[in-house]
Image (cartoon, rainbow, N blue to C red; front, side, top):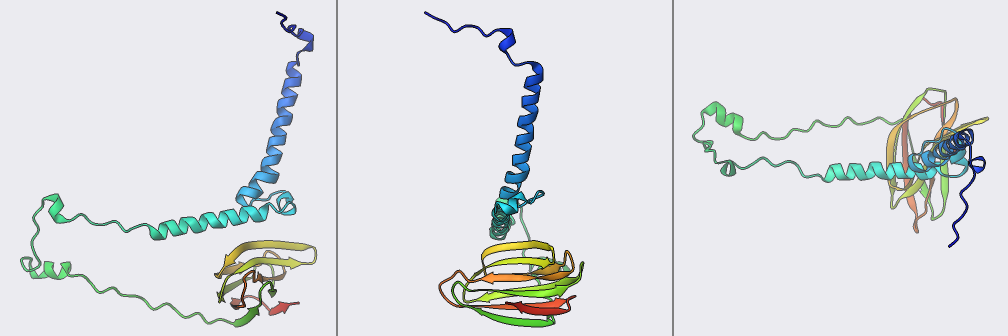
Length: 223
């Protein structure tokens, strides 16, 4: 039986070569983490490569879906039930046997609801989108200015992109697919135009109603 020859010491990689290979492998792994994994999984794109490769949009959608799933789970969690007195073996007095003050305290109180304040919007714009059609509304804002907004879709859902642009500058604040409403505060990252783009990917017409107020000098529909 023939066994392979044992390599000579001179043929083995040196410690310096092994260290260099390890460093190069670590650098490559770090580059993949920053340029691919972070944008695709978490929507974090420090280098801008994720946006070029369209990985950042994938990460944004994943994070949005995760947040929606967490919100749904929290909303569907059953309220904790108080244990029945019969199960604990403790005798309790009826309301008739309690002192007057105790009976009054034990009586359930009628729930009270504070009336929600009505928001006075500055502008309200209705938009009709046919299947496949998209449209864009922009606010002219100075850097740091804030505008409160709320939009709702009647008759379906839309894909949207909240973004801003100026000569030599652009930013995407938020994106979503098959969304029926959104609300919040838009803060301008720089002086320029900031707003929303909606596209109807459904099979029938939808109506988008946008309401805004705050620090902007102009609102316009982009061509």
